[in-house]
Image 1 (cartoon, protein in one colour):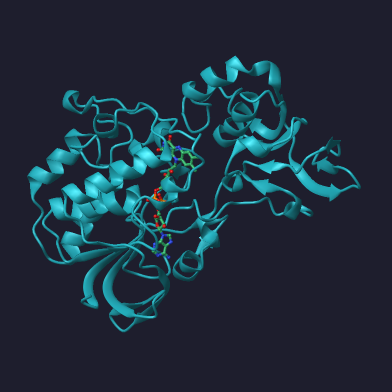
Image 2: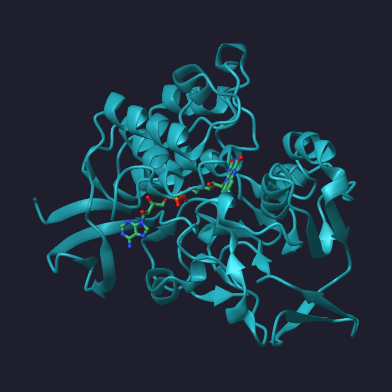
Length: 371
Ligand SMILES: Cc1cc2nc3c(=O)[nH]c(=O)nc-3n(C[C@H](O)[C@H](O)[C@H](O)COP(=O)(O)OP(=O)(O)OC[C@H]3O[C@@H](n4cnc5c(N)ncnc54)[C@H](O)[C@@H]3O)c2cc1C
């Protein structure tokens, strides 16, 4: 491996692969994508019963690109024939995009640490090899960093990502903390097996009247929920503040001082926080679990380090879905071109704009960008 590169992208998920294709489209070729496992690893790790909630449809030709596509001219719906892809199917789409574009992806190559040295960075790989780069794009996602509420007794809960199979749950009433997509996904999968669940949540996507699909439960989930509504009980305005182990059960205490008994370990469907990653916490200033960024998604702490993917946040604009954060690939490629003193090909810009994959003004976002 050549150990000096102008640009290194860390992570071969949709963010890393999508940015890689955008760089190539603009004529930037001196980059490398480093992936600690294999392309699409987070999706490969999904529970087999988990599916995309945002629908894929072969609408690219009509100016409405597939919501889960990461380039203007590909579509998971087309390549994997699934409206709500499973994790494995979507990983195969990512591999296909990477192969089609001959992307320089090095798999099984994790980045452990990054140090600024004069005008470049040294990346310490898990193999202990050192690689140099001028620009670093961090696309490590958040799936590896499940968030458990910072409360006494949180070690008694299990996280959504830890559920390998729903077949091992007993028939007893199960308890889920968190009432958005993941919480309902757990409850629906348990209900399919006849197992009842109580969801405790501060607010529920089921009741939300927001237009934003990140706040309101997706139609895909509402449809599945309605089939099993009699087995899923939702308790809203319940903020869990402590879990206490009793001889045969767990006592849950909520912020309003009410309590509940759970016969089984509570399941946290409480999201993810990439700020727990040592790479992110060393390269970025963190506030409220979010890396702080300039308007160009660059670290406020480490110039020439950029964040890509669902943790990109600007005030209340959070680009948490693929159809949101894919809109940053082209503007970031253009920013690089400017720094590298290379010319921008307006036809490429046009291609991304035509596909609605170009967001350079967050004021244009309105409801579409919030999570
Ligand atoms: C259950 C579930 C359902 C979802 N449904 C949808 C949906 O319907 N629609 C939607 O738009 N989004 C959905 N999402 C969100 C979507 O999965 C994320 O937006 C997406 O995975 C983020 O892409 P990414 O490339 O940033 O990160 P990831 O896909 O997590 O990829 C990051 C990659 O980086 C690698 N990596 C990590 N650390 C290192 C390191 N130190 N060195 C090298 N490589 C590293 C990982 O192995 C991984 O392959 C869902 C998420 C979950 C968990």
